[in-house]
Amino acid sequence: MSAIFDFLFAQYKTYETLDITLEIIAVIFGFLSVWFSKQNKIWVFPTGMISTSIFVYLLLKWELLGDLMINGYYFIMSVYGWYIWTRKVNETHVTPISKTTLKEKQTAIFIFIATLIFVYLVYNYFNKWTSWVAYVDTFTTAIFFVGMWLMAKRKIENWLFWIVGDLISVPLYLYKGFTFTSFQYFGFTFIAVFGYLAWKKHLHKTQLTS
Image (tube, rainbow, N blue to C red; front, side, top):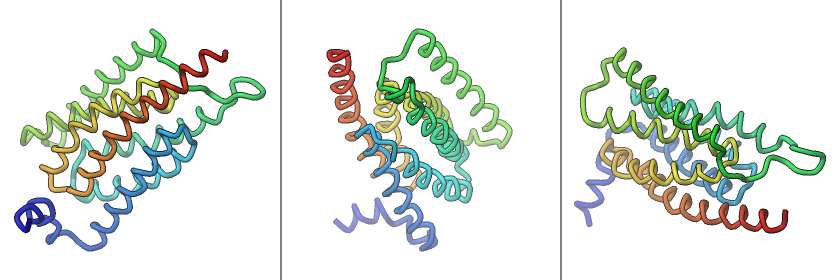
């Protein structure tokens, strides 16, 4: 048991208490954000903005550029998503859950490719191509950029991107030495699966009554 504990948490001996506390707080608000998203509640955005703000600070300090860009983007898209989710499409209804259109699929592909190119250029500029982790970071950043954009648009397919990105992030953050964040993505994976099923049920119910 001691060996497992050391494997998971030994690196925290060198971390400042404030940073550990902030990571735990960010993880808690991250869980709340994803849970509210599953429930199709607007609180997904304020809780997510608190989590991402803390992570931006920590990741800047830890010099993890890919993760920093992801969280900075999350914050910006949370503002956008907050507006979209509360915008009324008519006098009584706000933006509903829906499937992506062909144009939105094309936009998603563009965001994915553009993100890959952008992260590649940033990593080149800061000379961050020092290990295989940088390549995985580039790929997950692109996945999460698309997922967050789709969630802001209230598109059901957002959950599929979260599931893939979360599954990759669990071992990735564990390898980086951020165990609490790894646990967060482990939990995110299950919530994302149930979130997809819940949104799918809601969408099906809406289509039957429309």
